[in-house]
Image (cartoon, rainbow, N blue to C red; front, side, top):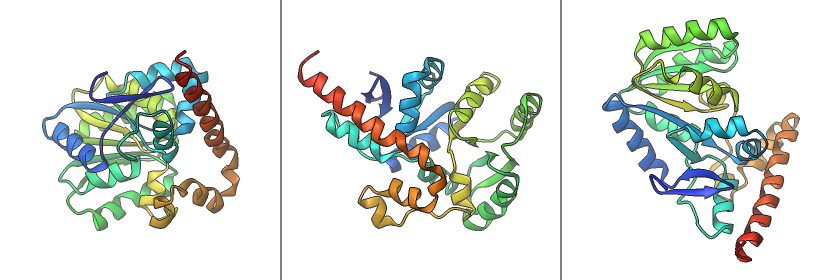
Length: 244
């Protein structure tokens, strides 16, 4: 496997640290390289198992990093542990601390409008070279891509939710010769304080997903992917032990 990857249910995860990954992307941005980053959790892996088109999109990414703690737990149970979580939010924040030109695509219009002010206040090193909300049609998508191209960003944070963000990135990637394209899900809501991230103790105890469920019970259906994922991992572990 390339780049020290660990396969979990046929999805190759990059085995790195959060700090190391931010530095790697920063160097790529400085060198005006192009990268496609997927921040994957159990829900994304389970989706890929039933949607081969989506799985093919993931496989075209330069990096797939373990965003969810369930991915880390799975790697441990399968006997090939990943170093640590590498989340979309922490990667975004790490890059915002660098002198990089950043474009923000996604989220509700009101959240999108708040992004620029929050970044300017909290991360003065970063340059906001463009912001656009995530409510647009196919025709507008092409115009947005042209706007991004003209803005010449080093990093493009795409917060359209999965799989929409990965599909959008891949559909436009060939139009660019440089830029770090990274799907960051609901990170703009956290960045603008519309959603509170779990306290550090919850994260340390690997219970961030429980905190998120308690904070937003209306999304309970999405969290079914986690126990389903762990059940599949359990079956995979048994299969591997039998040497099948």
